[in-house]
Image 1 (cartoon, rainbow, N blue to C red):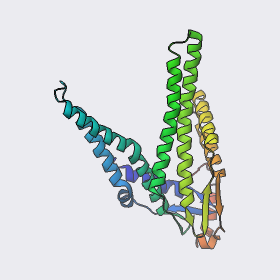
Image 2 (cartoon, rainbow, N blue to C red; image 1 turned 30 degrees about the vertical axis):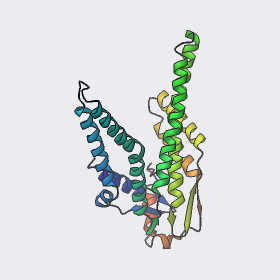
Image 3 (cartoon, helix red, strand yellow; image 1 turned 180 degrees about the vertical axis):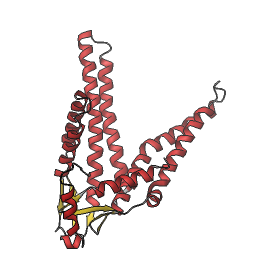
Image 4 (spheres, helix red, strand yellow; image 1 turned 45 degrees about the horizontal axis):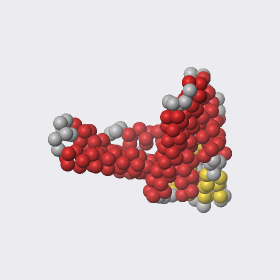
Length: 271
Protein backbone atom coordinates (compact mmCIF):
# COMPACT_ATOMS: atom_id res chain seq x y z
CA UNK A 1 0.00 0.00 0.00
CA UNK A 2 2.74 2.61 0.75
CA UNK A 3 4.20 2.00 -2.73
CA UNK A 4 0.85 2.42 -4.51
CA UNK A 5 1.18 6.19 -5.24
CA UNK A 6 4.66 5.61 -6.69
CA UNK A 7 3.50 2.66 -8.81
CA UNK A 8 0.47 4.51 -10.18
CA UNK A 9 2.53 7.61 -10.98
CA UNK A 10 5.16 5.51 -12.75
CA UNK A 11 2.49 3.70 -14.77
CA UNK A 12 0.87 6.97 -15.90
CA UNK A 13 4.24 8.47 -16.82
CA UNK A 14 5.23 5.37 -18.81
CA UNK A 15 1.93 5.23 -20.71
CA UNK A 16 1.92 8.92 -21.60
CA UNK A 17 5.56 8.83 -22.68
CA UNK A 18 4.84 5.97 -25.07
CA UNK A 19 1.73 7.52 -26.58
CA UNK A 20 1.68 10.12 -29.36
CA UNK A 21 -0.74 11.63 -31.86
CA UNK A 22 0.25 13.48 -35.03
CA UNK A 23 3.88 13.18 -33.98
CA UNK A 24 3.18 15.02 -30.71
CA UNK A 25 3.94 13.25 -27.47
CA UNK A 26 1.64 13.02 -24.48
CA UNK A 27 3.20 13.69 -21.11
CA UNK A 28 2.56 13.31 -17.41
CA UNK A 29 3.89 15.79 -14.82
CA UNK A 30 2.59 14.17 -11.64
CA UNK A 31 4.89 12.87 -8.93
CA UNK A 32 4.63 10.54 -5.96
CA UNK A 33 3.95 13.34 -3.46
CA UNK A 34 1.07 14.69 -5.57
CA UNK A 35 -0.36 11.16 -5.84
CA UNK A 36 -0.08 10.71 -2.08
CA UNK A 37 -2.02 13.93 -1.49
CA UNK A 38 -4.62 12.94 -4.09
CA UNK A 39 -5.56 9.50 -2.81
CA UNK A 40 -3.23 8.60 0.05
CA UNK A 41 -5.96 9.26 2.62
CA UNK A 42 -8.23 6.70 0.94
CA UNK A 43 -5.46 4.08 1.10
CA UNK A 44 -4.94 4.80 4.80
CA UNK A 45 -8.71 4.64 5.44
CA UNK A 46 -8.92 1.27 3.67
CA UNK A 47 -6.07 -0.12 5.77
CA UNK A 48 -7.71 1.15 8.97
CA UNK A 49 -11.06 -0.41 8.05
CA UNK A 50 -9.46 -3.76 7.25
CA UNK A 51 -7.58 -3.62 10.55
CA UNK A 52 -10.77 -2.74 12.43
CA UNK A 53 -12.65 -5.66 10.86
CA UNK A 54 -9.91 -8.12 11.81
CA UNK A 55 -9.69 -6.76 15.35
CA UNK A 56 -13.47 -7.08 15.79
CA UNK A 57 -13.42 -10.67 14.53
CA UNK A 58 -10.72 -11.68 17.00
CA UNK A 59 -12.37 -9.73 19.82
CA UNK A 60 -15.67 -11.61 19.60
CA UNK A 61 -16.33 -13.83 22.65
CA UNK A 62 -16.28 -17.49 21.74
CA UNK A 63 -18.79 -18.60 24.37
CA UNK A 64 -21.52 -16.20 23.23
CA UNK A 65 -21.89 -14.85 26.78
CA UNK A 66 -22.53 -11.30 25.70
CA UNK A 67 -25.38 -11.20 23.19
CA UNK A 68 -25.53 -7.40 23.29
CA UNK A 69 -21.80 -7.12 22.65
CA UNK A 70 -22.07 -9.54 19.76
CA UNK A 71 -24.92 -7.54 18.22
CA UNK A 72 -23.04 -4.25 18.48
CA UNK A 73 -19.86 -5.78 17.07
CA UNK A 74 -21.83 -7.32 14.20
CA UNK A 75 -23.45 -3.97 13.33
CA UNK A 76 -20.09 -2.20 13.42
CA UNK A 77 -18.58 -4.89 11.20
CA UNK A 78 -21.43 -4.62 8.69
CA UNK A 79 -21.09 -0.82 8.62
CA UNK A 80 -17.35 -0.91 7.95
CA UNK A 81 -17.71 -3.75 5.44
CA UNK A 82 -20.35 -1.87 3.45
CA UNK A 83 -18.25 1.28 3.61
CA UNK A 84 -15.20 -0.59 2.36
CA UNK A 85 -16.95 -2.54 -0.40
CA UNK A 86 -19.48 0.01 -1.63
CA UNK A 87 -17.76 3.39 -1.40
CA UNK A 88 -14.00 3.37 -0.90
CA UNK A 89 -13.13 1.60 -4.20
CA UNK A 90 -15.25 4.12 -6.12
CA UNK A 91 -13.68 7.04 -4.24
CA UNK A 92 -10.22 5.64 -4.94
CA UNK A 93 -10.89 5.25 -8.66
CA UNK A 94 -12.36 8.76 -8.85
CA UNK A 95 -9.30 10.20 -7.12
CA UNK A 96 -6.90 8.30 -9.41
CA UNK A 97 -8.74 9.42 -12.56
CA UNK A 98 -8.80 13.02 -11.34
CA UNK A 99 -5.08 12.80 -10.60
CA UNK A 100 -4.49 11.44 -14.11
CA UNK A 101 -6.39 14.30 -15.77
CA UNK A 102 -4.86 17.04 -13.63
CA UNK A 103 -1.27 16.19 -14.53
CA UNK A 104 -1.61 14.95 -18.13
CA UNK A 105 -0.71 17.03 -21.16
CA UNK A 106 -0.64 16.85 -24.95
CA UNK A 107 2.65 18.40 -25.95
CA UNK A 108 2.68 21.52 -23.79
CA UNK A 109 -1.13 21.81 -23.56
CA UNK A 110 -2.56 20.57 -20.27
CA UNK A 111 -5.75 18.56 -19.92
CA UNK A 112 -8.35 19.73 -17.43
CA UNK A 113 -11.66 18.54 -16.06
CA UNK A 114 -13.36 17.64 -12.81
CA UNK A 115 -14.84 14.18 -12.22
CA UNK A 116 -17.82 14.10 -9.89
CA UNK A 117 -17.68 11.84 -6.86
CA UNK A 118 -21.44 11.20 -6.79
CA UNK A 119 -21.68 9.96 -10.38
CA UNK A 120 -18.61 7.73 -9.92
CA UNK A 121 -20.03 6.15 -6.76
CA UNK A 122 -23.41 5.68 -8.48
CA UNK A 123 -21.81 3.96 -11.47
CA UNK A 124 -19.85 1.65 -9.18
CA UNK A 125 -23.00 0.84 -7.18
CA UNK A 126 -25.03 0.07 -10.32
CA UNK A 127 -22.28 -2.15 -11.72
CA UNK A 128 -22.30 -4.18 -8.50
CA UNK A 129 -26.10 -4.26 -8.40
CA UNK A 130 -26.49 -5.54 -11.96
CA UNK A 131 -23.77 -8.15 -11.42
CA UNK A 132 -25.38 -9.43 -8.22
CA UNK A 133 -28.82 -9.63 -9.84
CA UNK A 134 -27.41 -11.80 -12.62
CA UNK A 135 -25.56 -13.92 -10.05
CA UNK A 136 -28.84 -14.33 -8.18
CA UNK A 137 -30.32 -15.79 -11.36
CA UNK A 138 -27.35 -18.17 -11.57
CA UNK A 139 -27.92 -19.22 -7.95
CA UNK A 140 -31.58 -19.98 -8.72
CA UNK A 141 -30.53 -22.10 -11.69
CA UNK A 142 -28.00 -23.92 -9.52
CA UNK A 143 -30.67 -24.52 -6.87
CA UNK A 144 -33.02 -25.89 -9.51
CA UNK A 145 -30.31 -28.30 -10.64
CA UNK A 146 -30.28 -29.98 -7.23
CA UNK A 147 -33.74 -31.50 -7.51
CA UNK A 148 -34.30 -32.18 -11.23
CA UNK A 149 -33.20 -35.40 -12.94
CA UNK A 150 -29.51 -35.96 -13.66
CA UNK A 151 -29.59 -35.06 -17.38
CA UNK A 152 -31.26 -31.72 -16.76
CA UNK A 153 -29.08 -31.22 -13.68
CA UNK A 154 -25.91 -31.20 -15.80
CA UNK A 155 -27.53 -28.79 -18.27
CA UNK A 156 -28.55 -26.44 -15.45
CA UNK A 157 -25.03 -26.56 -13.97
CA UNK A 158 -23.48 -25.68 -17.34
CA UNK A 159 -26.02 -22.90 -17.81
CA UNK A 160 -25.26 -21.59 -14.31
CA UNK A 161 -21.56 -21.42 -15.16
CA UNK A 162 -22.31 -19.50 -18.35
CA UNK A 163 -24.52 -17.07 -16.44
CA UNK A 164 -21.77 -16.50 -13.86
CA UNK A 165 -19.27 -15.77 -16.65
CA UNK A 166 -21.73 -13.37 -18.27
CA UNK A 167 -22.38 -11.68 -14.93
CA UNK A 168 -18.67 -11.01 -14.44
CA UNK A 169 -18.22 -9.77 -18.02
CA UNK A 170 -21.32 -7.57 -17.86
CA UNK A 171 -20.29 -6.06 -14.51
CA UNK A 172 -16.79 -5.26 -15.76
CA UNK A 173 -18.17 -3.93 -19.06
CA UNK A 174 -20.75 -1.72 -17.37
CA UNK A 175 -18.19 -0.29 -14.97
CA UNK A 176 -15.60 0.29 -17.70
CA UNK A 177 -18.05 2.05 -20.01
CA UNK A 178 -19.47 4.08 -17.12
CA UNK A 179 -16.13 5.37 -15.85
CA UNK A 180 -14.85 6.11 -19.36
CA UNK A 181 -18.07 7.96 -20.19
CA UNK A 182 -17.70 10.05 -17.02
CA UNK A 183 -14.03 10.80 -17.66
CA UNK A 184 -14.46 11.86 -21.27
CA UNK A 185 -17.61 13.85 -20.51
CA UNK A 186 -15.59 16.13 -18.23
CA UNK A 187 -12.27 16.03 -20.10
CA UNK A 188 -11.11 19.21 -21.87
CA UNK A 189 -8.05 20.09 -23.94
CA UNK A 190 -7.95 23.77 -24.93
CA UNK A 191 -11.27 24.20 -26.79
CA UNK A 192 -11.80 20.49 -27.45
CA UNK A 193 -14.57 18.48 -25.79
CA UNK A 194 -14.64 14.67 -25.69
CA UNK A 195 -17.40 12.09 -25.66
CA UNK A 196 -17.40 8.30 -25.24
CA UNK A 197 -20.34 6.23 -26.51
CA UNK A 198 -19.59 2.65 -25.48
CA UNK A 199 -22.08 -0.20 -25.73
CA UNK A 200 -22.10 -2.27 -22.55
CA UNK A 201 -23.45 -5.31 -24.40
CA UNK A 202 -20.81 -5.18 -27.14
CA UNK A 203 -18.04 -4.57 -24.63
CA UNK A 204 -19.22 -7.53 -22.53
CA UNK A 205 -19.24 -9.68 -25.69
CA UNK A 206 -15.65 -8.67 -26.48
CA UNK A 207 -14.55 -9.43 -22.92
CA UNK A 208 -16.23 -12.86 -22.97
CA UNK A 209 -14.72 -13.84 -26.35
CA UNK A 210 -11.30 -12.59 -25.27
CA UNK A 211 -11.50 -14.60 -22.04
CA UNK A 212 -12.60 -17.72 -23.91
CA UNK A 213 -9.81 -17.45 -26.51
CA UNK A 214 -7.17 -16.74 -23.84
CA UNK A 215 -8.34 -19.84 -21.96
CA UNK A 216 -8.20 -22.01 -25.08
CA UNK A 217 -4.74 -20.70 -26.05
CA UNK A 218 -3.35 -20.79 -22.47
CA UNK A 219 -2.89 -17.02 -22.48
CA UNK A 220 -1.12 -16.67 -25.82
CA UNK A 221 -4.08 -14.72 -27.24
CA UNK A 222 -3.57 -11.90 -24.70
CA UNK A 223 -1.79 -9.40 -27.07
CA UNK A 224 -4.54 -9.76 -29.67
CA UNK A 225 -7.21 -9.53 -26.97
CA UNK A 226 -5.66 -6.29 -25.68
CA UNK A 227 -5.47 -4.77 -29.16
CA UNK A 228 -9.04 -5.80 -29.94
CA UNK A 229 -10.33 -4.24 -26.74
CA UNK A 230 -8.38 -0.99 -27.13
CA UNK A 231 -9.34 -0.69 -30.80
CA UNK A 232 -13.02 -0.90 -29.91
CA UNK A 233 -12.74 1.60 -27.05
CA UNK A 234 -10.86 4.09 -29.23
CA UNK A 235 -13.51 3.76 -31.95
CA UNK A 236 -16.12 4.91 -29.41
CA UNK A 237 -14.39 8.20 -28.53
CA UNK A 238 -15.42 11.37 -30.35
CA UNK A 239 -14.10 14.89 -30.02
CA UNK A 240 -15.74 18.24 -30.70
CA UNK A 241 -13.54 21.18 -31.58
CA UNK A 242 -10.47 21.99 -33.60
CA UNK A 243 -7.25 20.18 -32.83
CA UNK A 244 -4.36 22.51 -32.00
CA UNK A 245 -1.58 22.81 -34.54
CA UNK A 246 1.77 21.20 -33.91
CA UNK A 247 3.27 24.58 -33.05
CA UNK A 248 0.52 25.31 -30.53
CA UNK A 249 0.62 21.87 -28.91
CA UNK A 250 4.40 21.51 -28.81
CA UNK A 251 6.86 24.23 -29.85
CA UNK A 252 9.52 21.52 -30.16
CA UNK A 253 7.39 19.13 -32.25
CA UNK A 254 10.02 18.97 -34.99
CA UNK A 255 11.98 16.60 -32.75
CA UNK A 256 8.99 14.31 -32.28
CA UNK A 257 9.07 13.19 -35.92
CA UNK A 258 12.60 11.87 -35.52
CA UNK A 259 11.63 10.08 -32.32
CA UNK A 260 8.65 8.42 -34.03
CA UNK A 261 10.82 7.27 -36.94
CA UNK A 262 13.30 5.83 -34.47
CA UNK A 263 10.50 3.78 -32.84
CA UNK A 264 8.71 2.82 -36.06
CA UNK A 265 10.35 -0.61 -36.04
CA UNK A 266 9.33 -1.40 -32.48
CA UNK A 267 5.97 -2.57 -31.17
CA UNK A 268 5.01 -0.36 -28.29
CA UNK A 269 1.45 0.69 -27.55
CA UNK A 270 0.63 3.14 -24.80
CA UNK A 271 -2.97 2.87 -23.61
